[in-house]
Amino acid sequence: MALLIAIGGAVLLVLILVFFVLSRIKVAGPNEAFIVTGRKGRTTQTADGGRSTDTSGQKVVLGASVFVLPVVQKLQSLDLSSRRIDVGIRGAVSKQGIRADLHGVAIVKVGGTEDAIRAAAQRFLHQQDEIDNFTREVLAGALRSIVGRLTVEEVIRDRAAFASAVAEEAEHSMT
Image (tube, rainbow, N blue to C red; front, side, top):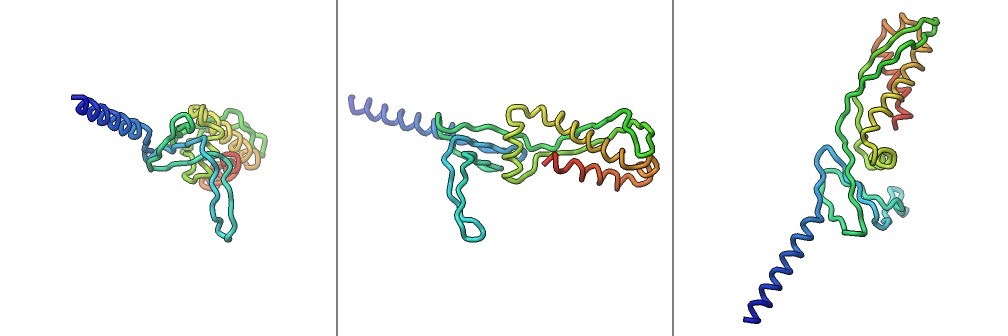
């Protein structure tokens, strides 16, 4: 009888251990990135044959699974979905001094590279709902800047060049 209790206890312990391990494995969806913090930096080989050490303590996981050590590591999720952002400005002054009200729509998303995801996580991880407001402000500033350099006719005549100029102006700040 004692042998059965010991075997039952061992089986129960193994099951608890298996469930614990399985509960610590997390799988990132196609539209999210996991940022695992609290890990030791790794030494990697660079393209030119040198060695580089990642001291950020962050691991970015895209569309894969990761085992998160309890207490030592923390897992956080960053949404990579595209966002539709309406940008409207009132009273933008053109090169000719004419005031214009402008409305535009931008589709933005966090870049799909590890560096872009790390940058977005450092700035917006705990305030992901603020990404829209930040992007709207940057695009509105770029829109005002470009309108100030163009005449009203240039804005109306070549919309593709206008949109390209706004995107180029905002790209540095967005990155």
